[in-house]
Image (cartoon, rainbow, N blue to C red; front, side):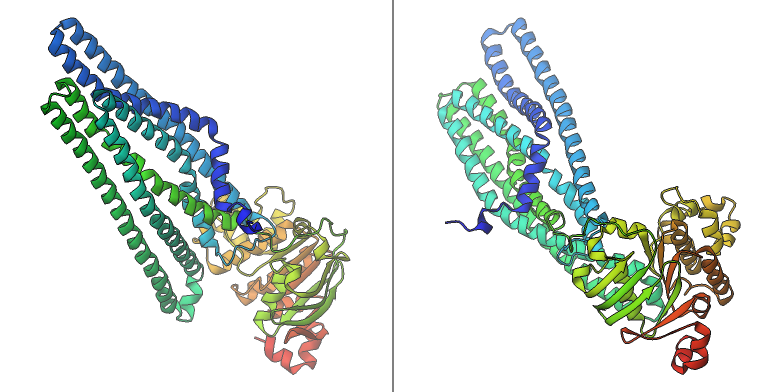
Length: 567
């Protein structure tokens, strides 16, 4: 009796079935047209044989004219059927690849992360591009496989009419070739899947390297990082060479076997003509078919390889598409207001963290250990889902676990210190939706006004991907402006001014306090300017709150605090 695991269909196979099912119309049309193409191509050497046969017998100009007209019809059929058949199939292939790319990207954009078994963003990008394309290739593979089979069958039937031994030779030879190549294609599938995984890891590594290039240069870690990437890339190169060897062996074997079959058909036809068992016209047809049949046989023999590659890519896509969400969010929405409560949270370096921020309050949290601030940000941003930590976080009096993630992020915006800058303009980076009512105020509060004034296009100044044409301080202020322009009930900022000078930092701190007056604001920072602007400061040490007061009172009465934050 089969177990449940063996009865359940493999996710990769399900993806391929879905691709085939929703493109069945295009595949039928493509199969008919490509089958017509292969049949017309097969008819060409048959027609040549008949022309030779009848011309030698009749020696009539009328017969010659009919023959030439028949060849013209065959050539026209070959040209049009190939053109329109490939147009139909490639359109369906491109459309299907687009669908899978969008689906994989949608998984990455969902508010709840998926358990993708340790895949990095760079690997998911490879899956959404190369693997999606290779999976969609199955739409072309099936019609081409069927049309190639049509050509082989037509050739076998035509040769059988001349002599049954020629037809049997084609059928037996084709079956033998495909049996050998089917075994070799399994090796290609496993090698290709391993290569795709290693290339994806190399892509993820170089993406991480590019993102961290500036800080790596700062502390001299760039050489170690480059060495790490070189090792990963070398592994990918070795696997690519292995795949190339396997593909080369496969292609060479297929070509050699096809040539042997064609030679066997030609030699057998020559022997039969020599024995007088077939005519000269039938010999011409047999030799022509023997040469022609190499193309459909080559295509026919390559299809198992592409099927295995498509299966390997589909299996990799299934890692993302079939991955369960890290957590199942609740259906509720937070109540209006902005109170925030962290009750006994244990996560990473946090050890039963407890504090409350009342609605409309401006609170600064001074972490003595930077890692603790990052762990708190992960919890508040729902990057660490409620099941991943102990304790409770309440927003508007309701637990995060009971709220939908979309509602949490609409109500509470957590802006990390390394927020992404996107290619576009200053305006689209600050207000991606184009609906912000506080964009001018956000630009002024973040002190981004000098950047806007510096360029003739103002807010429409073009920004390169990752803000490559902006300084570190400009990128940070742009990120802060985006967070302020969102105007959410609760705003959490993590080290928003680490890349700006002290004077600008003072102005930004006052502007944030002014702009966010009456709205709940939490700033996780060691900046004296921001700490001084807050209504009160919570000292986060060894994962718990150890002190609470205004910045100036803490400076006057807490020597450790003074040493930690004074600059």
